[in-house]
Each structure stands twice: as structure tokens, then as C-alpha cells.
Length: 275
Image 1 (cartoon, rainbow, N blue to C red):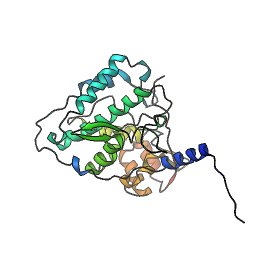
Image 2: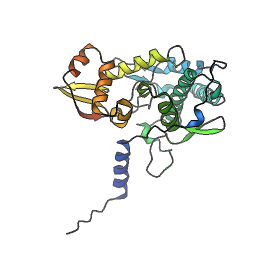
Image 3: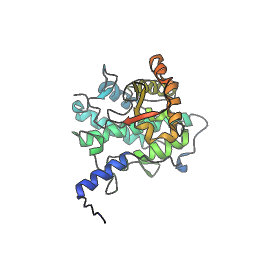
Image 4: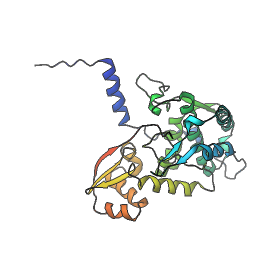
């Protein structure tokens, strides 16, 4: 006996959206962005981005940094747009490798904030359906920038530039997707002097927060980030757990000492908005 199941189009959209959320793009090198300068002959100006972060990022008692999207003025929006236009005029190949890392992180985060502001109010970044493809959601696939004559998207920055060039899993704590479940948007712009410190801080803050990792009755629950990008965290549950132990505080480290597998994962796509 053959059973025929008829799926409505809205249900199919929901199903495919859910499946998409369980996967993530692979790191695939975009070789065009490999050239770097041996010496610092150019210094991007992150002052406007730093001013926005200081004014609108609000660390909260629950350990989550929230953003005052609602209160961003027309003047601030224009300043952010002008900043991003300036960043697109930077000759990235003239930056050192360390400068490039800070450049791409800041560009990604500022571009994400602008995408939210351009479509505000939204409940989630996934409601901003501007990426190409019938079943795509979010802004990540849209070519937002033109850098050295080449169109670049947020996905390009994260998965074709940052991840494959630096091969540093701490970068997952640096790029922000404007969601409660995401690692915090830092209140400092990245630069060559603070990047290492900020990356370590971001990793510790996230891992030692319940949305990053928590142990309940001896069972480990993790952020879905570690499932989606398991290849960046050792390629196995054991690798993920070892990574968590690296940045865990004393209390969490004790809890992880008896853990050998992951019970489940979750992620909150709600907007990281200060209400």
C-alpha cells in the first residue's frame, strides 16, 4: 500500500527553513583575498564604528549584550552608512594579515547592524528575506559590499574569507548575527592591538553562559553553533567538549569533567534588541 502525503506550500517552506537551520556553509577559501602586506602601510579608521558600539551596545545583567536599535537616530544611521562606504574603499591587499582579520570582523558586524536597521522593526534577523534563492532567509547571501571591484556578502566574509584563511574557531565568537543565541556583539571595535584579547574574552563569555554550554543533571547542552560548525571544533563531540573545557571557568570545568557526550543543542534566533 502506498501512502501519499500532500504538503501545503506554507508547510513546505517551514520544513525547508528548518532543515536549512540545521546546516551551515562549509569553509571554502576565496583565494582572491589571500594577498596581504608584510608591513602596515595603511590603517583603516574604525572610530565611527567604535562610537556606535559605545553608544548603542548595552551589556545586561544576564550576560547578553543588547543593541538599542529602536533609538538609533537618522544621523547615526547615516554615519554608519558613511562608515561602511569608507570601508569598501579600503585596499584590503595593502593590510597586514592581522589588520585584515580586524577589518573583516568589523565589516561583518557593522553590515549586520545596518541590515537590521534598514528593515527594523523585525523580530529576528531571519525575517529579513533578501538573500537570493527561493528558500533562503536572512540577509547573509545578499551581496552587500563592493570591495576592490568585487561584490561580497556576509556569508562570503564568514565562510570564504575568515574561516578558511585564519582557521581559528574563536572567530565564531567575533562575528555577530544579531540574535540572542549568538555570541555577544562586543562593545569594542576589533583592531590589531586588542583582537587576541577580545577573541579570548568573547569565547569565555559565551561558553560560560547557559546559551553557550550548560550541564544539567550530568547532561551537556550546547549552542547549535557547535553542531553547525563542528568541523571547526575538532570535527566530533569530543572535540567540542575539549574546546569548551579550554575556556570554561572553574565551576563549568568541574561539571564538564564527567561529561563525554552531548545531550542536545539549541539556539534562540530572537533579535538581540534592548527593549
